[in-house]
Each structure stands twice: as structure tokens, then as C-alpha cells.
Image (cartoon, rainbow, N blue to C red; front, side, top):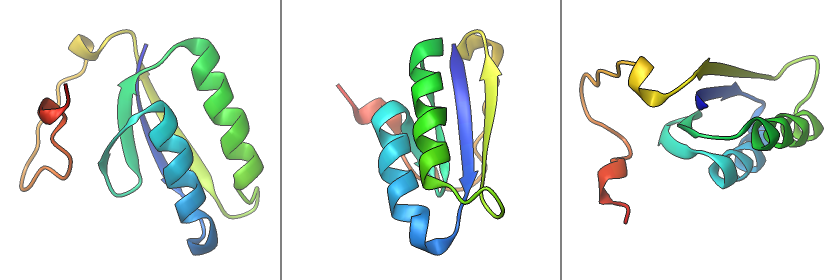
Length: 87
């Protein structure tokens, strides 16, 4: 499946969430990631994120689509991370 993940965590936990999300998805903008991921890997990501997050203040939002082709992405302004340069 194709997902977009967005997190909002306290300043002390930002680096840990960034590192975690980069292991599973492609970074595209501050606190925003996207990419293909299996159900099992997504479950791993969510479980690890819950160990980092503060239940009272932090959030992780995941938007799911069956495939990337079902999602139209339009970038207005500067694209932060161009995925075309990866081999």
C-alpha cells in the first residue's frame, strides 16, 4: 500500500521520530513522509512510534491508498526532497 505519514511530536522527540520514519518511508517535507509499505511494516512503524510518542500531546496521522497511482500530488513552491535522484 502507499501511505503518507505526518507526525506532530514534542521538540525532545522530533529527532527520534524523524529517524524512525526514515527507516520505513521517504522524507518529503518537515514531519511528512510517503512511500510504499506492507501492512506488517506499517504495523511495526506504528508500534515503534507509540513507544516514542507522549499519548497526551503527540500524534501520527497516516493516510493510506492502495497504490500511488490513486493519489494525485501537486507541489506548489519548492519541493523539499526530490525522490527522482535516488537510484
